[in-house]
Length: 76
Image: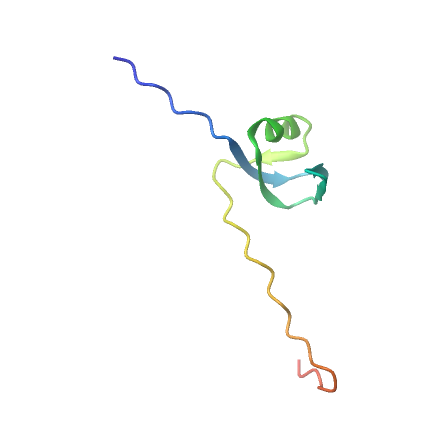
């Protein structure tokens, strides 16, 4: 009895090597993101995206910088 090979993943993780647009928004160089499999492979062939073997950890939301309020001095 043969086993069924595992299905291909629907999306691929990787790093943007050269900026390009995806869904009408620019993806900047160095950004780690998840793209649909076919599009990721096309961008990799164009040397604009490098597919990673393991998923990239979800990026943490940017932390708000502690800015002095109006009238306060910057201690740092």
